[in-house]
Length: 164
Image (cartoon, rainbow, N blue to C red):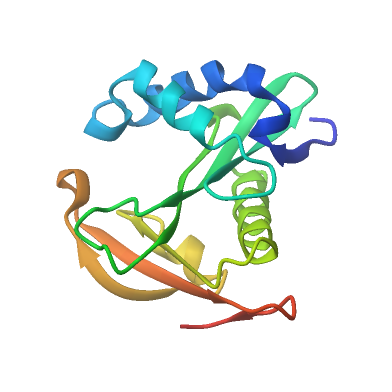
């Protein structure tokens, strides 16, 4: 694989359809990712290069490798938690190459740069991946019928990250 870039989806809107299909192929058995037209609408809403919500994509030329988003109030049952990182996905053929980590790190930096002070996420099976990036477990939730851990990351303006 040649060098790839991580850029705002807003700069590559032609990737909205392929990304919606990638999300659906991975998680289409779960309600939030079942409807491709709804995914396209949600991704279009995240085409904001200097504001949130936003989505980033990893591209190798015209090939979509993966994506990560920052969403507003992703879980309705947690109205006290505003900004969530989610839809972190890497094409199955590209996994194990550090792309997911690079996407998450870029999303965290971008969130901090636009003034977001804390991020949350939920995951049924990637707690260790995020813990290595200084995320802290803060609870559990059964979103989408899965047993998920909720994690939090505090962001600071001095380019550092603070554990929760």
